[in-house]
Image 1 (cartoon, rainbow, N blue to C red):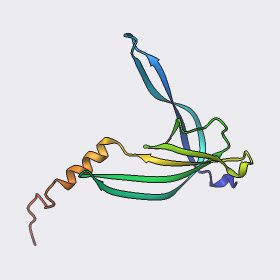
Image 2 (cartoon, rainbow, N blue to C red):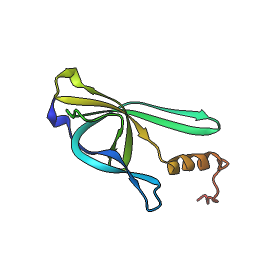
Image 3 (cartoon, helix red, strand yellow):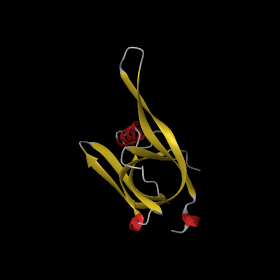
Length: 130
């Protein structure tokens, strides 16, 4: 593994459960580690399903070996959040962990895509020609 290619600082998040004052279960994602990583895109798709556009981006993230990392964690890079699909010990050498992830798209982005489709497709402002 060429550590010079690990040029992105990512956070590994874990879900922690707690109880509120009424005894209900609440939880939140908290950062458990910050590591250097290499992020490379694998594929991306966009589909129309049930009259909604759904997008999916798959990436491969390579980090130094972490034996405790599993699919119950998430990875955050900047404003992007990735769901871990699987993690592998590269060549079983305990030097690198290769993580296959899907980018999680927020509802706000999905809503904006929906609004732009239902916009009528035309320009709403009047344009003046010279």
